[in-house]
Image: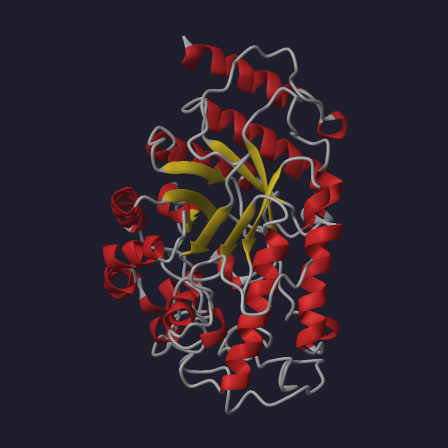
Length: 422
């Protein structure tokens, strides 16, 4: 039987040293039909950021009133206590995203929705302050996606110990993933997600093993590669045709060529890379022409050279880092020089907050031009998933508002500025 054989496969995948990783070419399991034709169709999707994994900049109201120490989901729950945290988060889960949002996504021409989830929702660790209930909402989301005709990428966004030290991992601070039994616990979470969702093949097209492991911050790449093999094998125990998504760990995408690539004994593997031009001063200081050129160069010099399906799983219309709490609660922005070590480029006080409708005509035009360039650049490969669907007041990032105000192209292939990457 398949399940018996897959246990042997998993042992084969984990037996070799991380220093001598090799594809399990002797395996005879065969892939079945794709649930989405990634070879010929473009991924055009959006993330549900800030919904089932909290980020202060997406929903400041959830954090405000919980104390200044509440800078991530861990400290929010810790400050509030389990009962109040569950009350506040449950209300957020049930109101921030509804089924109507999925129908709006489909009406805009999107075909994928990437849904972040934390390990604590699937395999909580004893002593963690987190509260649970997110999986019930993810269950609903998959039904909503089916009703709207959308494919789902289930994305493990936070790992035990934090894989990147960012607030989007659930716990801001030192990276402790890959210490102790954190990798094993992460695989337990992957197993829980695979068991629950991988067989829903008409909707769940892919499972992402881990969001943004931070190689430059100390995550070791060879053990990460071993984790990717083990995660792939774990998902294959439950589904032979679910695509497995890997993040590039902020390494050059080309450096992953040859790893888990087609014809290496594994199948249905997709690389995820994220493209932002606002978290380094050299990019943030560019004018709109520079932003467009950088996006196009990323498409032609990096994306187009990968040897496996590759999506830009996070990107934005933002040309500033002015959104409240974007760099962390209590920190400022590089754009106006209030972030430590930055130099002022412009003014955040009267723009890039609130609504898209409140932006000037010039600002909306520049954002649309930047979005159009990125659409052309990212479709040089497998496609894209915008970050994010909605916010409480970050107009450069809010796809729902950008669509409503004509800043995000409709139809998605429409261009006011031509093909800027030609």
